[in-house]
Length: 207
Ligand code: ADP
Ligand code: MG
Image 1 (cartoon, helix red, strand yellow):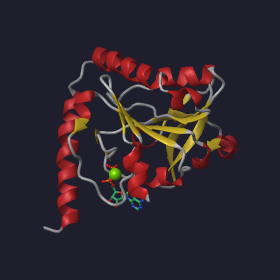
Image 2 (cartoon, helix red, strand yellow):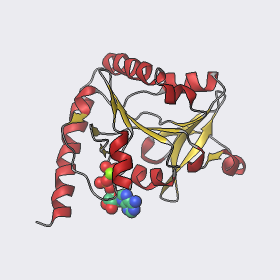
Image 3 (cartoon, helix red, strand yellow):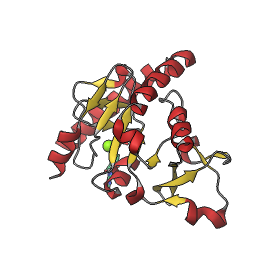
Image 4 (tube, helix red, strand yellow):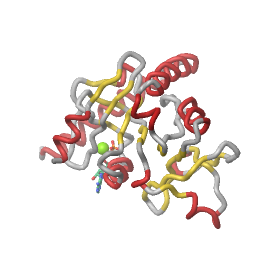
């Protein structure tokens, strides 16, 4: 079997396993662990200093990001959420009076009028931090998503200084994830138990 098909199959098996595990979580546990994970991130200097932050609206039992949003908006920062536009991901600015609308894959995104869409888009080079969801992560910063590669296509457009953070429950950590050339490495993975710094790996691999 060619190496690429082998990696693809390994990813598919891991995705199914991790999605099943996450689906089993009680809502109260999702809430409790999400609070702990977000508090950990809020205590990190790079996050508290960030002016423009990309978040995500959680799908199913994904780690929640609401505390991060409230904290950033309260401090006068810019918060944006992704949606899919013409097969690609784009981030739209959120403010506390925005309504939410279900976009591609049923993921919520801030509702903006068509005429205002362009001015509400936050370009990738504006982000200081992008917080990403994932199905599984490892300590090197490797991330397994849903298998559509949206973040792998979007993140390389951000500035080199932009910090990429994955939010995960401890059980979503794998020793070593299968990784392909297009996969984008994260700088940090934050779980309820630890903050994993992966920075050296991302910069080393992209050199
Ligand atoms: P995910 O990161 O969502 O788990 P994968 O890494 O398996 O998904 O990628 C899914 C698909 O997206 C792959 O078939 C891959 O070829 C495509 N893809 C990812 N990144 C890029 C990119 N930068 N350019 C072109 N295609 C990409
Ligand atoms: Mg990938």
